[in-house]
Image 1 (cartoon, rainbow, N blue to C red):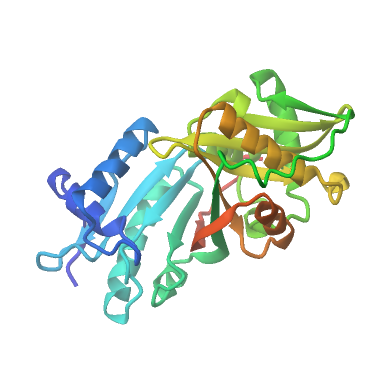
Image 2: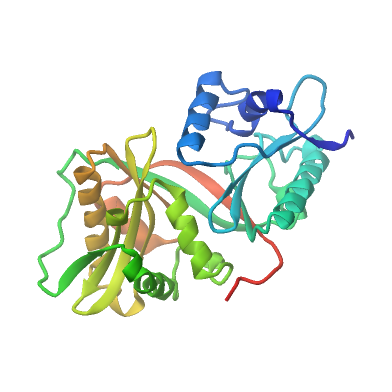
Length: 310
């Protein structure tokens, strides 16, 4: 097998036509798809210079792309069919190169989203990745108000926008919502809350008013963190959680309703999110608000050795 090598700058568009593909949009992707992703990356200030290939004639099927992001994490993109037996060794070699880069860069967490119909995830397991969750992606048109199910007015409830002065309060609330969570519980304790918040903030276009704390009296009851996805006219729920003692009181309905209001106020068309398929309580709330399935991805993660910084 030829050695792993970095892709040359003039090869990057060609590599992306493979690594960004899926079963729904099989490789090689049209240039328009690649151009759109590169425009998105430029807006979000993402580093699109990390690509590795194993030469295989004129086809870059054995390739990977790594996109680092805030919070000491990175997303790994592999072409469809990376788990086929004839390509497994090449995939493992590529992932080993990715890990060397990640350690040198001080990253803590590598993630990879794959099509559930992928022939095999064995190379990921062999490279030290473990299955995190099956994520279902849901969305709805926020212009349709027929299924908003506004919660009953409750004078004890109030909202607080994010501000640097309230950062610690947001951080404590986020950590509290992780207790006994059904939303990707394997992630708990993997990263320090500073990295987690940096990751949430960097996932979409951040605006302080799009991060909301739900207060019950003087006490945080939950939070909904949203952000605009550039070029898609979409507001994404990056994270939503309820503090344990406030669960089963309809608080999640308030949070989703708030996200709908934020999307409309911003003049956006769609509200979207990803939910752990096993998180049945959250799934029911989202479905009640008219969020519908669009696709699934299996999330895998590789936690690198080293301190979580607290």
